[in-house]
Each structure stands twice: as C-alpha cells, then as structure tokens.
Length: 117
View 1 (cartoon, rainbow, N blue to C red):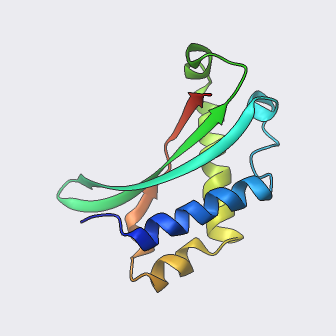
View 2 (cartoon, helix red, strand yellow):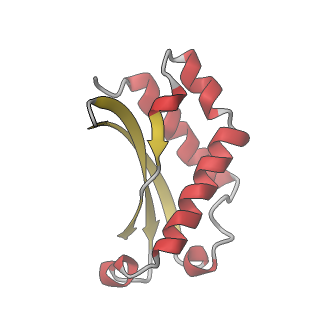
C-alpha cells in the first residue's frame, strides 16, 4: 500500500498549521533553534498487519547534528505528544483521514527526528 497524494497533501497542510499556530514554540530545548517541521507519513508492517507512522522532522539552526542527536528522548516524546494532540484535537485529523477512506486506527506511531539546517 502506497501513501496517496491526498494523504501527503493533508500532512503538508498540517506542517503549515503547526508553524502558523506556533505549536512547538513552547519547548525550551528547541524554542530558540526551531526552524521548521516536516511530517512524513509512511506505512510499515508489524506482526502481519499494516500500520502507518508519521515521522516528525524538526529542523533546527545554530546547533550541529551531533548536538541535536543528543536531545533527550523525553523531549522527543513531548514533541510527539504535542503534534499528535494538536492534529487529532484542533485539526480533526481522524475525521480528515476518514474522508480519505483511511482507517485512523492504523496510525499509531509519531517518531521524532532532528535535522540541522
């Protein structure tokens, strides 16, 4: 199963919304280095079932990739929770997924990565 263009466009729009609403600006560890956010939906198989994860890439300036790789897992979890809560609450992600004939229950993982820019 491939990620459809409609699904890619949905998450592309959410990237803009996350930045416009300053959802990630309250996290002290990235507040002054945050440059942008990208959401990359992709399917994966686990125990014979297909699921979807949405990788969250946080672009940051003024830090090296090595420094970014040392960011604590608790911060990554906080970012993951913030994005998930915002998209499922304020943006009605599940409703939008249903409109695209996609079962929102298949979306279950929001890993966070950092990228130096």
